[in-house]
Amino acid sequence: MASRTIGQEPTRRGGRGARQRILNAASELFYNEGINATGIDLISARASVSKRTLYRYFPSKTALVEEYLRMLRQAAGSLWGASPQGSDSNPRERLLALFDSLEASAEPMRGCPFHNAAVEAAAAMPGVQEIVHAHKRDYADRITELARQAGAADPQLLGNQLAVLFEGASALSTSLDDATPWVHARAAAEALIDQATDLSSRAFSSSRARGSSSLGFTADNVRREL
Image 1 (cartoon, rainbow, N blue to C red):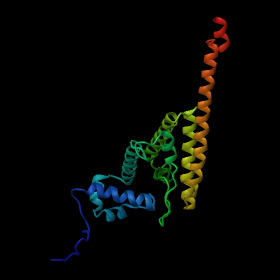
Image 2 (image 1 turned 90 degrees about the vertical axis):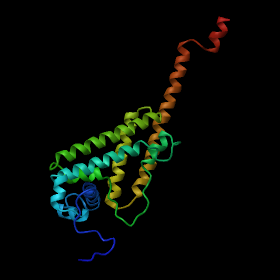
Image 3 (image 1 turned 120 degrees about the vertical axis):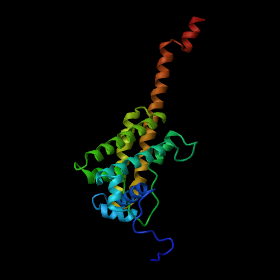
Image 4 (image 1 turned 45 degrees about the vertical axis):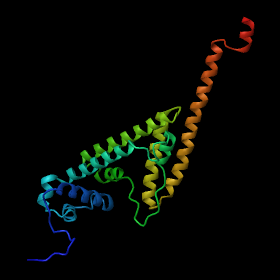
C-alpha cells in the first residue's frame, strides 16, 4: 500500500464538497493571478479534483467566473446589512468607513474584483459584464441611500460623487500598489459629505424662516393684533 504523509491532500478528490473547493480555488486564483492567466488545469489542481469533475459542476470557465462574481455579490450584500463600526455608527460614519485605508501589507494590492473582471472580460464574457454592471449600480444606489440618511441636500449627487471617488481610489491604489490614495479619498469624501449636509441644514433653516414669515407670525404683527 502506498504511503501518504498525514495531512497531505490526495491528488484528486471528488464527491461532497467538490463544488465549493472548485469555487474557493477559482476565487483565490482569479483575484490574485487574474482571470485570463488562470486556466482550468490550474483550478482543478488547486481544488484537488479532475477536470471532468470540474466541468460537471461548471460547464465552462465563463460559468465559473460568473459564479465567482455572484458569490462576491452575495458577500457584499451581507456586509451592507451590518454596520462597519458597530450598531451605533451613523450614516456619515458608514460612508466614511468605505474609504478607510487598508493596512500596509506585503501582498500586492489587487483592487476591486468586479473592476478587474470587467477589464479582463471586456466583450468576451457578456454575462460577466452584466453581473459587474448590476453590482456597480447597486453599490452606487446603496451609497446614495446612505447619503440620504446622512441628510445630504442632494443624495443622488453625493452618492455619485462618492462612488466615483471610491472607484478612483481603488484603481489608483492598485496601479501604485500603495494605500495612500485611500487616505486622500477619505479626506475628500469627508469634505463632500460635510458640504452636502451643511447645504441641507442651511436650506432647511431658510425654509423654516420663510414659512414663519408667510404666516405673519412676527413680533410686530402680534403686537398690532393685540
